[in-house]
Image 1 (cartoon, rainbow, N blue to C red):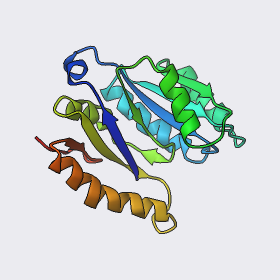
Image 2: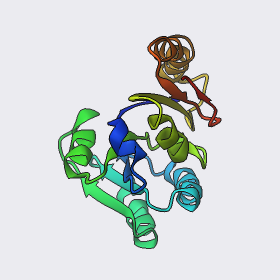
Image 3: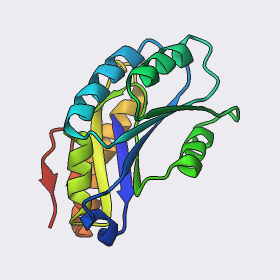
Image 4: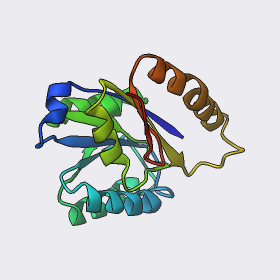
Length: 178
């Protein structure tokens, strides 16, 4: 599961021309990208203004070629390359280049639901912090990180978010909070 935390200025969120960018760091994710692209096309149908910003972190499995093909079809998508290895470097690159009002982070092996972006935007209208969850393509039994992330989301993030009066956007698009 991918856990997303987003902070936003409430005044920006109430603005009808809100610009949203989804940053997607990629390192050798060619086997996951076709499923991700299908999910992003469904999001595009519901959120036509969202920008998908892929940041390739030195893939050598054909990921960049697949992304270039997707970007050629989806004119609101962007591909950048970040040579500095690690998890933070591609996200920092995307944040530095984003012109959006707020940014969502998405792992390349995650499958967001069609309403994921809209649910996150809607939750931001009611709170400064949004926590969300997406389904991962990683095998459940083989990923201790995935099990830990799900546990933290279900038991800690949800409770902490609700205790602090924050909205919570989940994979099924149900919102919890004030």
